[in-house]
Length: 207
Image 1: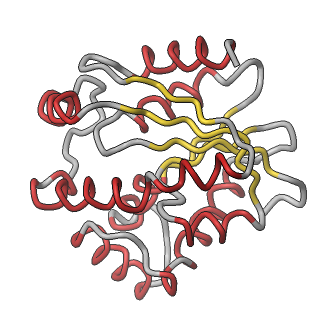
Image 2: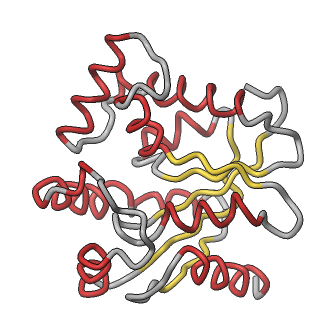
């Protein structure tokens, strides 16, 4: 873990909103001259399950169970997220002026408090859409990031949407009380990572 304050952004939005495609564009293009490192927590979990990230067998089995159930980490399991995050920062050679983009972590107030000891979330990017747009995007995959997603089964999607509205959305109030701006992007049916990136730049410049 770097020994300096880590400037961070947080992506929040329901499954299908385009968080991963937007994160990919930010990592590829940067943000106003700053390098962005996209920590996609869900992608890292899936990499562990596919043996692309080495972890002890006990931890790997636990992650496979979590993905299968489509649930959030329990407090006593949060060490998994911390270990994956440390590994990510080490591999990406994070430097002082870089920006860390959180996607999929934190998911609730407990996780936000745990991360607050080491990371300062400067802005929250909220990908907002109505339910009709959400279901259209889940069905048609306009951003092209949901192919072969084993966690896209209907039952798991409903669980994830329920948890998003119950546990993720309160994070907006949590971070706004700490003075962090909430950048709210209206997601349309056809938005891709690039169009979301362009919307973000336009919104950021108006701040």
